[in-house]
Amino acid sequence: MCGIVGYVGTKEAAPLIWDALLRLEYRGYDSSGIAVLDGQGISTVKCKGRLSDLKARLRELPAATLGIGHTRWATHGVPSDRNAHPHRDCTGNVVLVHNGIIENHRELRERLLKRGHRIESETDTELVAHLIEEEYDGNLASTVAHVSRELEGSMAFAVIHASEPGKIVVYRDKNPLIIGLGDGENFVASDIPAILPYTRKVIVLNDGECAEVTRDGILIKDYSGRIVHREPVVLDARAEAGEKGGYEHFMLKEIFEQPEALSRAISARIRYDRVILEEEEFGLSADEVKCLDKVYLVACGTAYHAGLVGKMLIERLAGIPAEAVLASEFRYAEPIIPRNTLCILLSQSGETLDTIAAAREAKKRGARLLAITNSALSSLAREADNVLYQRAGIEIAVASTKAYTTQVVCLALISVYLGRLRGVLSPETERELCAELVSLPKKAEAALGVKDEIEKISSELFDRKDIFFIGRGVDYLTAMEGQLKLKEISYIHAEAYAAGELKHGTLALIEPGVTVVAVMNDPALSQKTASNIMEVKARGGRIIAVGSEECLLAVHLDGDDARVPVPATYPLFSPVVSMIPLQLLAYYVAKRKETDIDKPKNLAKSVTVE
Ligand code: F6R
Image (cartoon, rainbow, N blue to C red; front, side):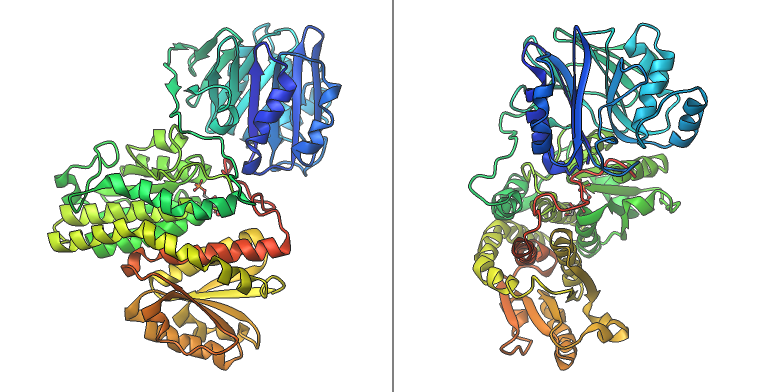
């Protein structure tokens, strides 16, 4: 989704901003632009398409040492040169970039048009430049703070004014914005990776804060105009901007990073055959855990699929009623939150607006909030009472892979921990589950061994119109994530069905040659799934069966079908292992189709609009 970068210092701004925007490319965008400010005023270049298209235009800009840049993911108005940011007012003195959505844009547009403003784009963003033009009182920061009161929605801005050279004004409300501190130079960005090569010292703005950024200093004021003193956070030296490290795509690299990521997520949290969570990671006392009446798991997309696994884990291992809800639905569903409710919010980026809005709703209704996220300093991490970090390492590819498997293990750790505190799990069972968790990185490593087999299978699937995924119990949840992965990056229509549901309607879709991916990891259910597979085969369907050796034995496959064995584990942990062949399947089908695997169309890495 949209990205913001700003620079003020001694270096030439435009190439530096372009380079920083490139590091946000993975978030998804359809146009980009940069504006620089020097003694002569503001100059802007912007265009539809890739940053490589913008690069050719940078020479049109003067060698100024202050500028702002943007990658846009279209919401209001089609992707076009005209709608690309930065946007300007009628005079060209005010220029800004914006992430988020201004919800009252219609009435603002009408009002500005009536007052004679020339509005050139279809965007909500441009309207803000005209509002600043109208209200400018010689002080850009106070004008931006004032104008922000008229705006409804979510927003992060970086604004420059021709009369105030040497200064970038930034404002944040419900959209992330950070300030990076350098030596004789400062940076602004919507996301940390943008500025990692330049500085590791950052200040995170809170909602309602407005800041003036010059090369020598930062002045932050809160919503009521009071000066805010905030110490910068120094980022971990291991924080990396993300390199492909010899892999053709980030997605493949991240699939292969899973054993290591899982090991980071698990190992320090299991000691002496027990799950140990630190106070800041969990926070509820043993007594509070015993009193828990309900757990909600709230998330979007892939993280929601992890949440569905979490519901099963928490109910089975800790005996607490649990419900997984899509974040975009939770907020408006008037959820009933019993007195002792834990709301677990899952978000790789920690910036998904739907999830953050759901967190606020749950908090308002009295729930305790636990975030599972991969992003330190993210809005969600700061919103929640406690944070369990996934420790997956930066995920660049838009399609989530290691974020999913590390979320599942975080949920497994929580479930075992809750199960012990509530007396549901005996020490013996906890020991066995912990041993199983510790073995998951090795099992994931073994599952990666199916790569060549999957590549071969994929070469026959790339021209399919529909592919179905089936499974029972937890395998159905793996099937759901498998189909999402496939359609996200290959654009092939895919659907997941609970295997037992096929005969209640969808079996009509199975025709000769149609491929059905069957997931089988639960020995208690494999015979049943095997019967459903026979229903598919009787109608000419072709099976790709993914699962443990033991479960695969239950099914009779023939020449046209494929068998993809993965190591067996405790069934509710199996998504961590059996998802790996499905991620590889999506990857190789997309590769064969030559889609833009790391940046699939119309998808963004972190979705900061509702
Ligand atoms: C799928 C994918 C999306 C995200 C969803 C939530 O591969 O990446 O479905 O899972 O947008 O994102 P986070 O986890 O950042 O809240």
